[in-house]
Length: 329
Length: 285
Image 1 (cartoon, rainbow over the protein chains, first blue to last red):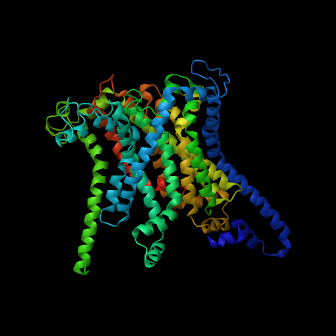
Image 2 (image 1 turned 180 degrees about the vertical axis):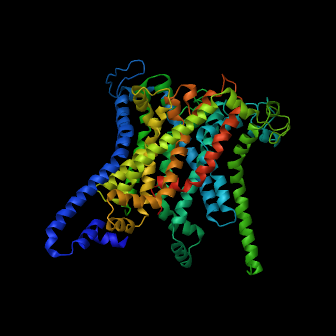
Image 3 (image 1 turned 135 degrees about the vertical axis):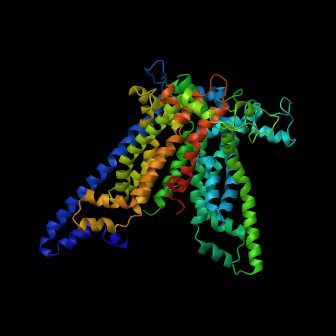
């Protein structure tokens, strides 16, 4: 590594070594120049397919979604007229949209709190050394690695109105009554329970992610720094607060925002469990955007609803950009 | 082994506490999987009863739920679709992300840093913002109702992610390898191959795994772009097609999930650290 950074290009080094006689110097420079040009050309050629793919299928659709949101495009009538901010105004005036926005915020905030608590606890446990660590680590992250549609289906079965495994345990433990009694919860059927049931699935699925991100942060703190703090008389909490947290703040923030964006934009859990019901109790923005955009075919309206998810995404991008730019390459 | 009794007792106490602390997490993680597995192997009369202990068999286990899937549903086709889609996605991702990752990490081209960050940023744009415009593109290309729609759209998240990941891998290969190759008279392409080889197995394997597992995590694109029952991948077909009317056949549903979900989950959990490093951009390092 050190060899390279001194002179810059390996070609320069090779070129200079090859062209020892000082008389050939001008020739060397032009050769170097041509080689650099060729290297650039080669580099951009290698980059082109990936960049093109991403520009055409992420960049362009993103701009297209802005355009859709400002138009009255629908599946039935492909000729779209420009309607300005009409779709956004209509969304903000619709009660369902306001409800979906509220539900989305509750969903994300409550889920984030539980994920933070469970994730921190698990991360501290996994920070310890113990026999069988690898296997146990592999087991506890399975909720996150299981394909989302499959795990959600499994939860739908566990929340079954009659044969719920959760209710069987609760009922035998005497916490709830028998099937048919008023204290028998129908998790996905009662408006006051459904949002919590859905949040529980999201937390179950993603807290291992929080734990592993935190763990990656913890293990990145050099032990010398911790030892130094210990020598200076810091107790565990002081070390955590003054040494660990500031050092892992960047990774924490990025992990947190990543999770927020994923949670806010996650359609699968709610769509598969309740489709937004009962009585819109679990309607969140992605479900509404899907129902309006695809099922009702109102592309413009749907795109406008989806774009309400853009502000947190934008924040994440800015923070990530600042963080990445600060790092050495 | 020769530690004083006091220290050994302390260590035993620490280990006991750690294991005790981990028990609830293991139960929370594994119980739903266990429930899925036992449901998949139960006979229906054994399944739909509340008066007996539901977490064990009261009638002999059966393969019936699995055979039903292959004989009476599109499950075989979905399995094939899933594998074919994943193979295409992995191929497209490798062909684009390996050269891009190499160029960004190695060739010191102007703007490499910004281009790299730009590509990575596109991974963050959630599908829910992109799926409506993409549905127009899919319709224009006449790909709707075919799994080709997913071959086209899944690389939108695998390419950014894998480019970023491979860039990291390429940076770990010592620069001397390239210099030696150039001195030996290799061209740029030859030098590239010499760098790619050392990372081939871990780097390229990781890319393939992610092309596969990230595709399996999708539900939205499959739901929005593929309406034909026999064209779906597993994660879309199982929850949308195996439920007839309002009737859930939980035995076969859980069998369908278990058969594909568990291998994917186990495979993915081995590569999870790469995923975390990838998405946090190695911010912790």
